[in-house]
Length: 190
Length: 173
Image 1: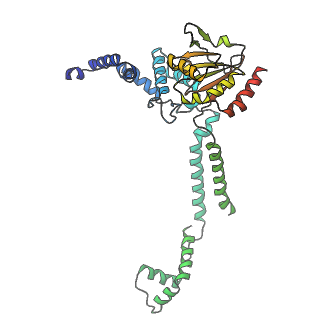
Image 2: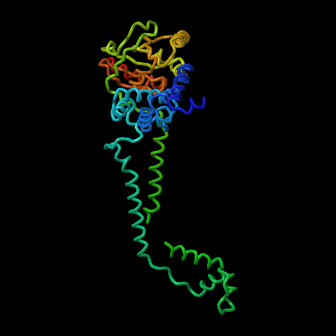
Image 3: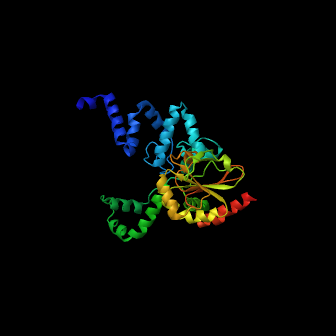
């Protein structure tokens, strides 16, 4: 048994035999593997670019829906007939519309779709440039007054300058001083 | 300066507008590219007599509705009385989609059969050509054999009264 499983040919044969004997649902699952793997890769390659219409955010390659099975069969059959990938995609579009394609075609009605993100990016960059330019023209923040300087020092926990009165007013005047500094800081940052 | 406060509001309202429209649409309804195109040709056997084949070409000169249904499809059962109502004013051809013969026969016997005829699409090949991606789906086909309307999902009383019947009246004239 191990030698049988190790051999690829035998494994494929084993799958075919199993599929034939079990039939029905199992055959549907096993068939893609049992057949030509190169063809199967091409089928999946095309199916990955097509949307399953039943479970709309899945590709036909990923979906287990009945319709996706049918469409994979259809792709397989058409590849065997020698049709090109383009022809097969056109076949799907003829029946289900552009929606079936994960990559919508570029045409006037889809220009916004394709260009939209880039237009938005450029608009944001332009806005940013404008913002940075206008900031450059802004006046620099006014230098701090002596009282503010002392208060900042108190807040930072540094030793007060040689001014014995400074700790007390800083505490008493806290609410008003708070407002002015906050306003100035934010104004300066803008 | 005022623009700075108004602009976000405008952006927000535009967004609300898009969402309001978007939410009222059904993302499952994929508009069919086949509307206003020639109905794909098929040759399908009758359910009652598989030896007899019927084609789209034979329907030429008549307004008709192709109704894809299946016994395993629950919404089909829901729309069935409306299909019967529709069948009073137009030729409705039932296309039994991916179904078993005995199941379909039993289903029709139990729920009533008002179809002008029932055709069998066992493999779903005709369904594929018509872009069926779920049953029920119905196609209104005019005298020239052109698809004029596709009903995706079950026929609702609203769709029957407001879309299908007026369209059929127009096509029949």
